[in-house]
Image (tube, rainbow, N blue to C red; front, side, top):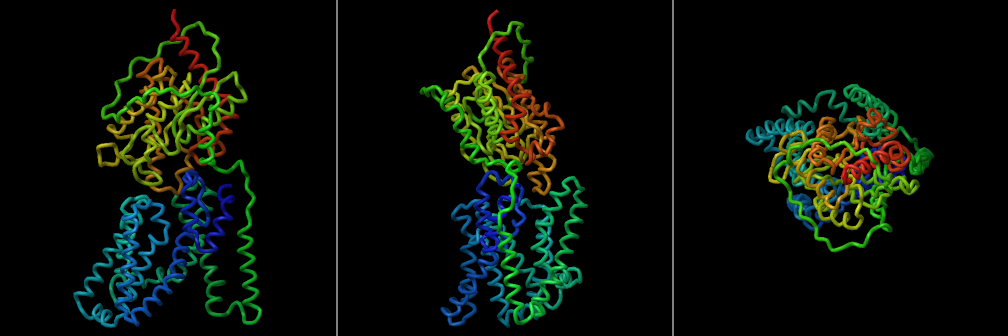
Length: 581
């Protein structure tokens, strides 16, 4: 449904060759991390090429006239432009997405190709490459090594690798220039490799393959998500080759050779048919709103308004200092004592919800349930932030790599202000997704995860500091265990995301939550949502993106069946245990 809803904008941007800027604008949305990718996603690179093809000839023509046809000066000017494009991300501190999709930041790769073309247009350069043994040896021996490095990077580098965006793409383009030069020599290993029949066959059909491969791979992945990965790859590649071959034989070659459309009315009819096809592609497709992913930006705005009318006037209580810990929390003590037998009659608990995007949606669902059932509970506010965990790591690597946003490390100040404003009976903490990626701890330069003992100890200390803060005004703190990721959520993802969604990491986080709760008997409890859902956590209808549970599902199913009764029981038992004999 997300793909159908976005198709019109994707098709328009692809048609008018601005898909890269459209994707960059869409990528600023948090929901794009979880929505299904567009079948037209691969048009971003075609758009960059086309934009360069519109502008570069005019630039070269202007340089040619300004230099009166001196190719060396034209090549030098192109080299300067390439250098400016390469330095722009470093000088301006551009984000990885901006570097990846920006025409200006990726132009360096095309401009270096232009520089290579100017250099190889010099007859004396070509003669030296062929006739001078030292020149020829450097290219023929260096190019295979560089090509092997490139293939190795294809297999091992994540898209979020930081150095790619700080000169890595330029380095790759320079290596490609050497490989292209080696392919143009009369002989050599690169020339021999690229002259093999299979690669020549793929080369003649490469553009058609590029056009069709992505939607086919996506369709196969979404139609048969449980298919064994090697079989899925074979099926996707086979279908791509089949469609590309049909396009090559029945569309591309007839057009290129002039056999179709025939002179006369043929070109006009083809133009009309093509235009009609594009217009049909731009029509909005029917969308089932229930199947769409969550609008996280709007959800965040809605969450910020929770319980505003019920809040108490803010006092000037100083913000507690919660330092970044370097040592683990104390060992867990005995389990909470059994509640008393006398159960007082209590009003519905005032609940505040804290955490990440999973907590945000859970809080919205609880609020909707509480408004419809005011005798059960009342959500008075909270602080749940998109993409923010509790552990304040120095760097995080998931969909992207880098330090967490400053707002993610300011939860001690934000939570203290929220507690002062709401004074809840129960503080619910829902966090997991951002506790389990690859991370670098403060004071370290090594990538680890929560499965590493040192990182686990740091996470214990951070969670302990969080629950101590949430309970500092007398609220019962409830940790909600989040179910492990849906199996389908890792399909087609980078290796870093696949590691993040390893069930062992989520299970480790659950153990840490229970350890911290046991170390604070009577003050911190665990509400085991993951255990209650059990196998249903792998129900795609319950969690379409494999991560979140939408607020309506929380309201209609989880809240009445488990969350609301569980929170009321924990609060009642805690109050009873704290009551004097």
